[in-house]
Image 1 (tube, rainbow, N blue to C red):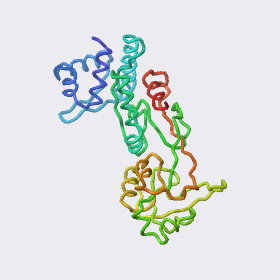
Image 2 (image 1 turned 90 degrees about the horizontal axis):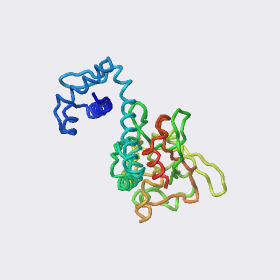
Image 3 (image 1 turned 45 degrees about the vertical axis):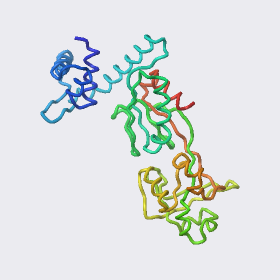
Image 4 (image 1 turned 180 degrees about the horizontal axis):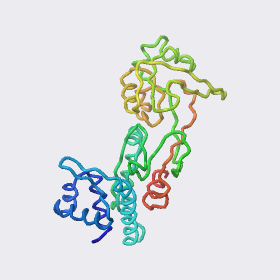
Length: 295
């Protein structure tokens, strides 16, 4: 039995949740895939998958094996590609995680050019505005915006994000005094502010003034959300004022569709990091991807 090939089949069965899907990928039969997995279980002397008519699930030993098998197969694919193509070609799969807004608006163009440079790679992009556990979800590299807590992950700073105070002109027409009436962060106390809940400060917005002074304002509004895309949509609809990253509405800001309020007051820069598990820090395709987005 080719144990590496069987490991690869095992990984794909877990990822797809289906013997038949893997059989179609491999242009073989479902029974052939099942026999390979059974042979792997016999070789290891343990049950890896619990099979039922409706679903597949990992056993305890299967949960232990899966992330290591995935790493082994992925590393071998990358090594094979390097040897075959003189280190110019990366192969295998790369699972990337990011927030929804950043992934759609910033990361996708970078992924497109990266795949054009490395056509042998497959990318599995997971977008979520919630916390992503890299180990549990088998993520190779994640993009995280904000200060990082102490952890066992390797982190490489790839840039910074700058929050801007933004509103649609239609909303400003409803505000007493309009844009001219908003001269200081304290003036936000009377406005409808759209609150993003995935940051620690939430409805306390901090600004640094032209003379270096710090102003913290507790804002209120009738919408709070954990989605940057919802913040974008709400702002464009004229619902209220948002304190959003500079990459969320750049075209609308440049065209004048969205107005930058209090431009003399700035936010503290927010770091952006690429993070990945320690055991993945020397994987060529991860290093190549991180260098690509840094550039």
